[in-house]
Length: 307
Image 1: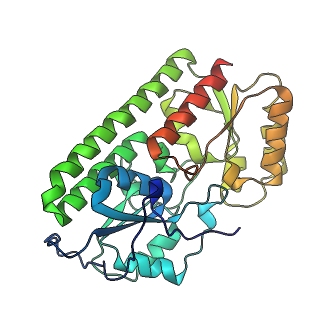
Image 2: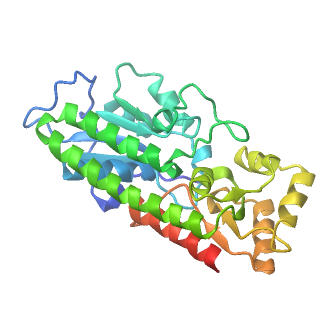
Image 3: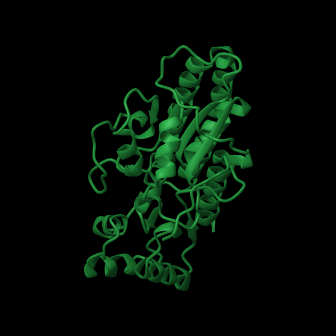
C-alpha cells in the first residue's frame, strides 16, 4: 500500500516547518520568541487528541492519516525521522502497533514522549504486539486510555509551556467529559442488548465491544491471521463465514483498512444474510476529530443492533 506523509495537522491546521523546533527536554519551558512547540503523533487519531488539548498553542503534525491504509505496515521515511528528532513531544500508540516510531525513538536520547499503550487501563508496558489471550494494541478504542493520553499530554505541554498549563488542563478536562459521554452511549448499548453476539474481521474494536457488554464470537485464529497479514486457517475461515448465517450474530464489525479477499467474502456473507455491517477504522475520516469520529462509530453500532 502507498502511504502519505502529512504536511498538515489534524483538523486542517497548517503546520509550519519542523526544523529547529527540537528539544532535549530540559523541562524549563519555552521563552517568548522561541517559536511554537512542535508535537509529532504517529497517527491522526492521536494527533487529534493532542490538538484538542493543545488548541492553537502548539504545532501538531501526524505521520499517518490515509483512511484507506493499514498503519501496521507503515514504513517510515527520513522525513519522519527528522520530524520526530526535532519535535518537543512525540505521541504514539506503542504496543507494537506503530513499531516504526519505536525504532526512530530508539536512536534518540532524552526525547519527551507519551506512549498510549503504557497508559492503557491496567498498564500494558513491556507486553508485545498481542492478540488472542494477550493485550490488544488498538488502545484508542479503550476510552480510559484515551482520557489518560489527553491528561498526560496536558501535563507534558504544561511543563514545556507553563504559562498555558491551565488551558491545557482545562482542555483535557473538557475532552474527558466528551469521552465520558461516549462511554455512557456504550453502557446504553449494553443495557439494551446484553450479551449480544458480534463478529469482527480484525480485533481493532475489541475494547469498545467489551465496554458495550457485547460478546465477540469470532474464532481467535481468524482474527490473529488477519492482524498478522497471513492467511487464516481454512477451518477458521469456514467457522467465521458460518457465523453470518442463521442469525448467529447481531452485527459484523468490519475494518476496511485490513481488507483482504477473505474479509471481503465474510462481509459479502453478512450482507447476503442481512447481518448489519459496521465499519470501524484505524485513522480518521477526512475533516473529523476523535470525538465526532468515535461518536459516529458508536451510534452506527447502536443502530445496527437495534435494526
